[in-house]
View 1 (cartoon, rainbow, N blue to C red):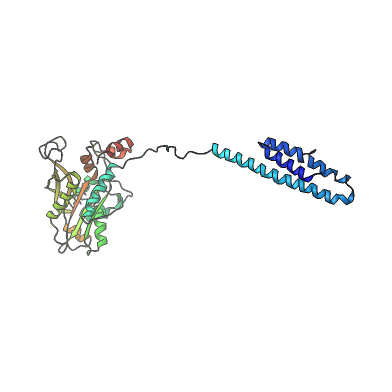
View 2 (view 1 turned 90 degrees about the horizontal axis):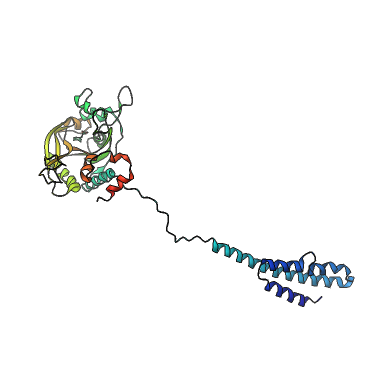
Length: 345
Ligand code: DAH
């Protein structure tokens, strides 16, 4: 047995095999059942005893040599196979992604945020109140005792026979809650936008749920001029710098005096058009000087403290600002409608 020659042949054949099949043929030729190395191994029994050891070592050397070369080559083929697979299955991450349809901000929320922004710039806090309210806060402590006729217009949904728990019919109870927290000592300057509820069986232009933006200031020497200046800043922020504000006398149980606030029509400048119903003015808000009883009931001494309060209808403001003529748009959740108004500033 010429070990060196055998090794040379093995090397040549393994190196020249071009694919796993050819390599397999080489394997069979050398270490298969009737392979060259297998045969050499089985011949060991015919070798005289004193040569057996040396012979065995030679066969082993050749077999180890073969195994090493074979497994290296085999590994190479497997790597190539894997690389080929990876190449074929490569994901092209530069492909444009599937577009996900984007929503649009709720136009009502946008309006509310707009008012919050301008009020915060004047030092107002933005406060939340519960929608399930106590009769005490929604009516009684706002100077609307049980049986008061002004309650009729604000009939709402009740949770118990005693009618103690109800869905708030206005955001005004947040005034009471805030003053109670102030304990008759702290100045108040807050707005509280939020949902309100009322029974709506009488006409088609109202909805059982709507949104108010309430405001309250409690401080020293507050007068109607403070209210006027504040409302002017808010409506001019929403509708433009040329808008004028006027007060008309009104009635609310929790303010005295009470006013209805009109703005000059931002559309026609006061000449009269379809938006202002030819009057040149649009009513946007109820307001007034906080009634002394209300201050007193919430722990503020009316001889020391005074305040103003206002309540905007958020839907109305949004309808005016964005030229919307149907308030159901706000609740339909129709993306096409939201997108329509997304283009407006
Ligand atoms: N809460 C009143 C309503 O729902 C609106 C209102 C009027 C709020 C005058 C006020 C106010 O704070 O001072 O009709």
